Image 1 (cartoon, helix red, strand yellow):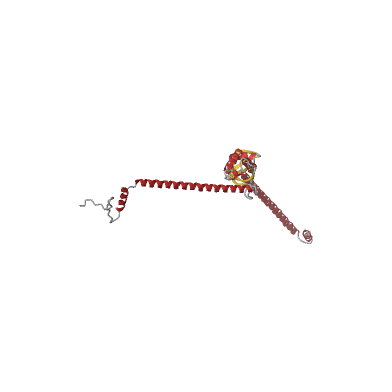
Image 2 (cartoon, one colour):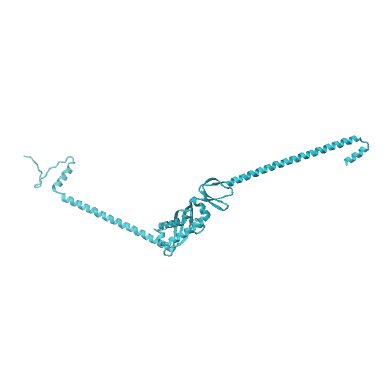
Length: 322
């Protein structure tokens, strides 16, 4: 509208040169706008390319970090690693330390430390919360409850076989059922009183031997078996305690009698010794020997003079007196 109005004014008397100058300035201004638009578009393209390069570099670095993390594995002390790739388990265990592996492989860590498996009647003591004592029948058919702890460890050079054949929960699949089976089998050969008293150690030894025979070939070493408690029926426990008390009292009485016998024997030996000593003394005592002892005692007394007495007259004896 301004252009049209200006054009009309030009017809009304404005010089035509003015309009030429006006159109020239307008053309230069439009060219400046076009130039500035081209410059902004170039800057935007440069910024986009720069951002693209930064994002690409960041992604490459992240991918490299992820690959490096998957290629490096650290096995802590007391553990071993089982290597498996695409479902195939390698027979080579990875010992503790830093290792570089295939980024597509998986490493399962397994403990080779000494572990314990406890089965107890106490609620919060064993692996299973609650009364987990082993109930076994004795030779006479009585039911006893046994608390037991088994110490064991995984053999490092057989960890792959254990993982492949049994899995990481081998304690529940192997240790627990074998403990129960061994105890029930061996306890059936003993009377309840024997398990409770003098044959408890023998029972524990046989249980350990049984577990060693059946578990050690599987790659798990049994270290020791601890029979921690034997729970008998209440009535039987009372009877055993009474019997044990009576045995202790009898043993105490035997000890006292033996002591008295030894004391009497000692006194007899002492009396015999005194009798023999007196007999020897009586046989050796004579008048002359008594005189000798008497004179021998007087020699240490100051101011004492011994005067011999005649045995016939009882008068003092003086020799060489006219």
